[in-house]
Length: 258
Image (cartoon, rainbow, N blue to C red; front, top):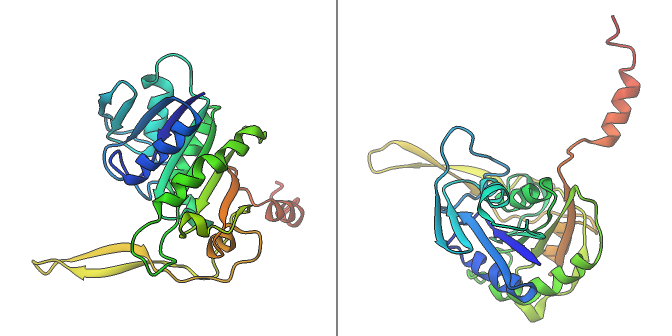
């Protein structure tokens, strides 16, 4: 099995090293194509107005001056010689990608790009901020990663779907299980902007998150992570809200006729 690895935290990220360890439990044919610098929050951005520089580190490892989507695109279309990968793994992200965060995520976007090109794809993220410890429990992702992925590869899912895997902010032996979940939605917005002053007195801003918990329903990625379970969510690109689509078709029928 040929596996392509990418991420949005950059080629030197610790989570990418963890992902490589996971991938090598599954195969010895592993290619790594990741951003030269961090690309967190870039979502599905693709570079269209600038040239993209690629640095070849070794025979199967490249860094790209671009986004996670750029990395997967170049990997599938240009950089990987011979047979197309059987699997794209994106991550392991430094922090959770759950609920509405998934639409910002470059990690999820890397997997989406693989899916768009007909390759089974999985995004992986290591949650943080739910314990008093400032360190991330990377061993949780490392020890559970292949254990979670193998069964996913043994079952079928639609070609327009990716799997979004999030590991809880717990040590490996404290994980409370694995749950197939739906994408949740927080009951309060946690993203914020903070105004600051530089040394010349000019204003600048930091955008980030506050770690406030919501009260999610059972079966959601949020609830699983809060309670220490690994969350596995099937996601797809279609953002259509079907109930609203059906109601609008009925309520607006004939109103735009000339």
